[in-house]
Image (cartoon, rainbow, N blue to C red; front, side, top):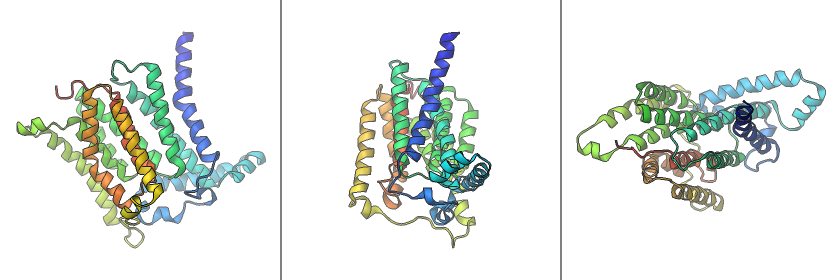
Length: 333
């Protein structure tokens, strides 16, 4: 009984408390030269214009969390109020709470996914090291905090969970969950499309196509529609005077700026070393297919994103970590 309690306490401290403290240090322990969100009393106007306006769910959550923090600050003791006023604004504190909530949920999901159908050599101590590494990767990318990244990450990891559950159980319920999830998470951030890439990397088999077995195609079509309908729907119905498809074209800057080149090099090296850690050859195959099906996303990062924002590569890195230690031995059986 005591041993069970100790294991549960240890798991809670490792999966929930430690990640929260790491994010707390990131948001309040140092200031990033990348953004000045601490000085913004209200959700910044740019969140509701340009490409950010399509991220409907996190934008509305930012408004509600800012109002919530205003109420909390007005009704707390003078010492706590002084501390909060000194270290941020209602918007920034609300941003931290919102991101912390989804960050902890993401940590719980990573823990569950790493434990599920792991390779034989993947013991608990090694799993915790990999989990901790994943958490550190998430935290260090928060030098450019936003209101949508941790929510999008939670949605994406949920999609990975539904995919691997569907892969091992073949229960259609998980497939339907995935369809709904992609539709909803498209209202959070465009990274929802990577759930389609992950599904394709697991289920695509060129031999099936040669045998004229088109099951894979019929499975992917609903996933594509669940992404495309809300994606283009937002761009049709939102006010075009206040929105735009992209902030700018940064392809030249990505290959000339030392900061952007550093971000690209970091991501490539991390993916390379994770690939080398794959316990079985099938996992390496899944990573290769995943990167191939993710080429449209990678292309968009190259064109309209900034390599220095390593958070854009974070879904690719976390996926590689999960795949590297997942049991895909019966991939085509």
